[in-house]
Amino acid sequence: PAHIYKTKIWWSVPPWLQGTLVRNGPGLFSVGNSEYNHWFDGLSLIHSFTFHNGEVTYRSKYLKSETYKSNTKADRIVVSEFGTMVYPDPCKNIFARTMTHFRNIVPNFTDNNLINIIRYGQDYYASSEVNYINQIDPLTLETVGRVSLYTSKNHIALNLATAHPHYDKDGNTFNMGTAIIGLGRPKYIIFKVPANASESSKVLTTIPFRSALYPSYFHSFGMTENYIVFVEQSFKLDIVKLATAYFRGVNWGSCLKFDEKDRGALPASSPGLYLKSSLPETSTLPCASHTDSAQKQQNDMIYDS
Image (cartoon, rainbow, N blue to C red; front, side, top):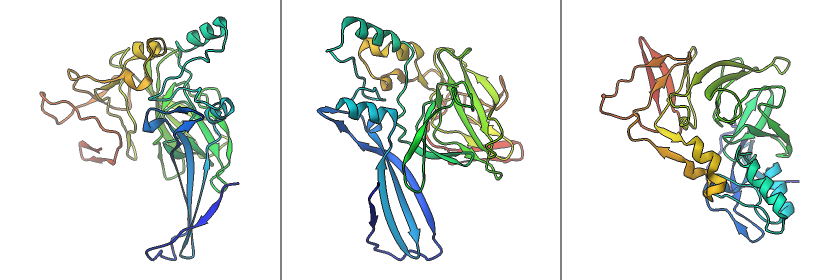
């Protein structure tokens, strides 16, 4: 079980502040004699801060993802991450090593979910930017199990999805993802997961890439009461480099690039429809990770990131 610590408080915690705040992030940067190369790669550690009657207690527990279990069983890093590419055990025979190379043409991304804690329906999940998420118990921090967004009952066919969805007043969850390899025509996907677990998740709309081999990288998006706001920015993922990264001996992070010639675009939630930017024609849409707010004001959409 996770250890529970009563924290020393240097300020007054208001008595009305009650509940538990759950967060995650990288927590373990070496396994055996192997080390990760990037801050984004460390094995996920789940944290909780419980506020009750002016006191705060803290607990933490490593996410028992398939990545965590594979690495700890081997006593070395055996699953590749954003900035750390790993290769077959040299003790494997040539057939096993060859099959490993072929499997990496279509990357099987890690489920080391270390970016955010999100809610789908009534369940809570540790999430990153891939199609794998891990359900957790928000009270004990135990890992319930891994879910794939396109092989579960949700069946949303995508390779990547943001870790920053939005929620409406009824508890429904809205998120965006990217279908890149092996899932039909490349596209961005906007989908909804109902608050009611008896209802099925559904794709609301799709948006084709402006460039089939260079989809935009996005970490978040905006939502108003009636609109989804997505910036197709000029920070891009090179699909060919992604598919060949393993063979070239480079990590997945190196497959991202900033296209200085591309101004970016503001596609609306309908395919083929683009919003007009107020930026000068000589300017490039800025690249941003997090969306602060999005709001409709008369005929304008104000997007702050």
